[in-house]
Length: 427
Image (cartoon, rainbow, N blue to C red; front, side, top):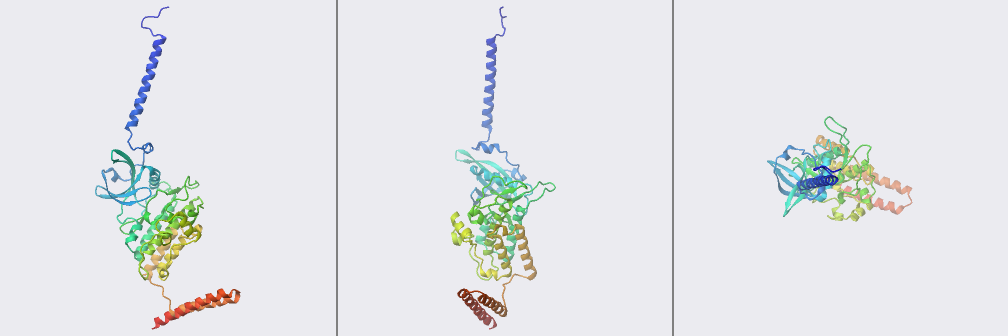
């Protein structure tokens, strides 16, 4: 049987199939090529796959955003003062290798319920390509409100504070940390806000408004705790060494929510002390601004330095005697010491610190300006005689006479000095 002219034989059918397959492959390759070349040239594929958050402020849609000057540099990037139309904003710029920190801070800011008067206000997060010579370099931007006074650390370097300013700064700072630590249930129009540990709490990460109220910033290491869920993959020994709690320096952390919150409280105690050192409410000159433990370990301590000082020797920044003679500062010092207690479980909560400072401030406003605690000569002598009697009782009941004798000698010396002071006052 002969095939009809123009019929389709097996060879022609095979050729047609091959042509169809080749056409489809070429079309697929062209499509892939076009897709790849239409992607923004950020230099890192992972960034392009992350759609990023929507802008949290309509201000950011008003371009261009002009970078004006660098205000601070940190471990993960630098902070610029920038301008959008007539409004100043802060732009924290992360290099692409610190994408994880940018994502974490962005996600914390976008957590439901994170709007609070003492937490830095978030405006948006963006991916940008900046021209560097002949190539375009990827950057990650985090945009927040801008405050001209800058960080608490920088402010204290150039300014002493009054009693009122001490209370204002520290109470608002504790209020912000208390809210951050709080587990807020789902409210109308808002989702559930979990308790969040900051994990890098320090004076550099506290920003001051023009009225000296504080806002907490820099959530690159922060971690949230959902009820009944583990904290996830995290490293215990993070943050700034100088502000690390003893258990962090030892590497002996209990990876539970309360343990992380107590680590923040230790750091809060150190920051409260920093503000205290620059308060001129007490008699005498105000010391130059120093970081915690700077006198002992300098400005760039190693982990081993701080382990020796904080863990083994259990040292803390100095509480000056003159502060304890001031009725407001004495109570404030007690709060500071209760924050940096070596026993993590004995530390105060942020809410308790806020309430204590508020009570001290209210008491001072009722009683008038805080004054020095001056005992009368009779009271001083009576108190020291009582101590001598206690020492005598101890002497009668203990065989270690040498130790008791030394104690009695010191108390007699104190009594003698008190009598001299009383005589001077009577004159």
